[in-house]
Image 1 (tube, rainbow, N blue to C red):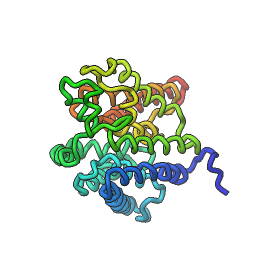
Image 2: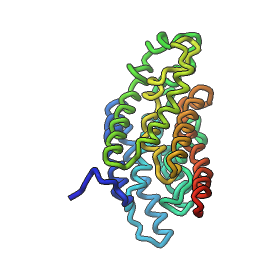
Image 3: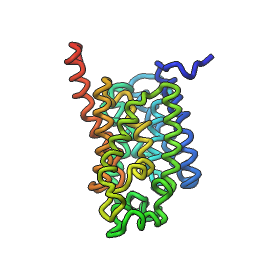
Image 4: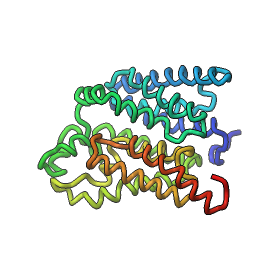
Length: 303
């Protein structure tokens, strides 16, 4: 009998629980944005199976994909990051970069420096900006876009537009709520610790509170808005908590999470991309080896 509240130690068990938690945001994304959201998930999973099989064959292993279930997690995170109307081939390219370049070329599971899903998505975002800009024009401006380019309107005036929902971005607030529910499940089944998600949300919410300015035309949005816009909850519970690319020490996890959250806000406020989760996480990943070496040096162990 499976004890769902015992801390899992085997990778397939951990990933199975992450996939269960991802099922709700995937379903809500399909409900909010339509069947193309599911199409991206299906294409990403098929591409992930193909790329992983080729990599396993090249390593003289049985070319049987999804053995440890880490690649499906990567595929679904990439699919959730894609605009629903984006060309399906973008998901294939992003998955290929994430699985082959960001994971397998580093030696496979447990050896990668960067989060594979965010590496794949960021590469596509940088390499095909026109394709993604075209899909943004087709889908309509998100709340983060509308907030940055609202001119002299106050937050209250801007929030009356179709891009805004009750708490955050229209549609995105529901996906974030589903990711939050999935994250609570991951906490209950002890796949993630509360420290990293809380640090990310505090790192994002604190500067938002400082620069909220009571909703004037200079305001950069409230903490609640930023928590329920873009991919905030996915970043907090599913991406920043990747045990391979996050620091091991508790204190360093606080630094990592706070830094990722603050970087997300900084990119949203002043960067060239409206969300910034992928780039914030990848920059945080760069700091992880340094933080782990500091931990090893203090404990007198080899890094």
